[in-house]
Amino acid sequence: MAKKTFGIDFGTSTIKVYKNGDGIILLERNAVSTVGKERRPVAIGEQAYEMYEKAPPSIHVSLPLSRGVISHLEDMVALWNFMARKISGKKKLNRCQFYIAVPADITEVEKQAYSKIITKSESKPQKVCLIDKPLADAYGLGLDVEKSRGIMIVNLGGDTTEISILSLGGIVVSKLLPYGGNDFDRAIMNYVRKKYNFVIGLKTAEQIKINLVAAVEKETTTTVVGRDVLKGLPGKVTLSSGEIYPLVKDIFYATAAQIRSMIERTPPEISSEILHNGIYLTGGASFTSGVDQFFANEVNVRVNTTTSAQKTVAAGIGYLSEHPKLAARYAAPIE
Ligand SMILES: Nc1ncnc2c1ncn2[C@@H]1O[C@H](COP(=O)(O)OP(=O)(O)OP(=O)(O)O)[C@@H](O)[C@H]1O
Ligand SMILES: [Mg+2]
Image 1 (cartoon, helix red, strand yellow):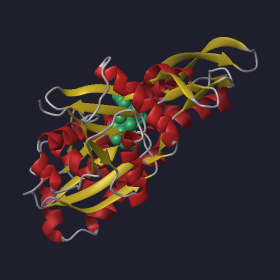
Image 2 (cartoon, rainbow, N blue to C red; image 1 turned 90 degrees about the vertical axis):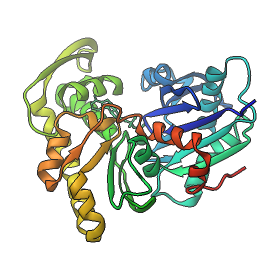
Image 3 (tube, helix red, strand yellow; image 1 turned 180 degrees about the vertical axis):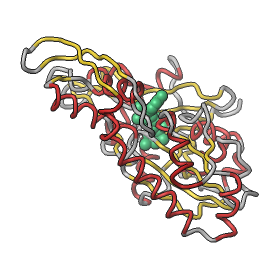
Image 4 (cartoon, rainbow, N blue to C red; image 1 turned 180 degrees about the horizontal axis):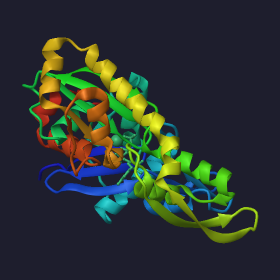
């Protein structure tokens, strides 16, 4: 029987798992809550994230990936064990093959840490392959990676923004910037606490972001529940997009400046194709209202978006896992 093969995108916000033949079978928040010194996991995903900053001291909530790098390997392994059991039911995921997408612009040691999530887990893998994320992203977008002379992908993720240029099947340049959509959540949470003496969790802050944040100014309001610090009671606060925009606009301008400077430094035979086809936005933060129009104006380039932006890396790593000969051009198996 054919060996089971999985493609995984371990994102800072969400983990996406692709199973050969079935497509994307899991999209789960990258969070794990544990108890005790041995850090025994009690909840993962959305359920664990809900506990963030609300859990009693006996429960530790961990977000084990930050800024594209694994910050707590044991928690990440525990999280994967939990997920693997969820995927496989009673049977263990033994002797499967795993393709993992990793940021291109991190050190070799940091890349290898991703393979340890699997090799140190209960899933005894037959093979683990690491493939640079921008390549997976391009395949997930359905682009002709091997033949295109110039592809520019801007992946607006949770903790990171990855700007990459590909040409003829290779990565010309990739820059991992240490900010993303989650920074908006943190900025909103801090602002609401300072301005209104009102405590909200990160999940509520994310909801405010989804309702109010836009790359261009707009006028909308949203009401959220939280806890009034002065009264010590639950309450409501209404926020407007106008007051949130100053908290987030610098990130949009900084990203536009990075895109512009990368295009300017690219040889014309590559940049001309990028300018002809436009740049591609991927990652969950590309759902931010007006972000395509903003980059189009600031960089003076056509911008392509997709409704599957959060899943393109997983779709691409899945595609490569189903085409091992093609994948072998980009990565050597570790096991
Ligand atoms: N409709 C939306 N509007 C704005 N932001 C959104 C929307 N939906 C999701 N996001 C944001 O997208 C981010 C997650 O995107 P994604 O899953 O691509 O990140 P990730 O792959 O986990 O992170 P990274 O690539 O940085 O490691 C979060 O910050 C989330 O709040
Ligand atoms: Mg990502």
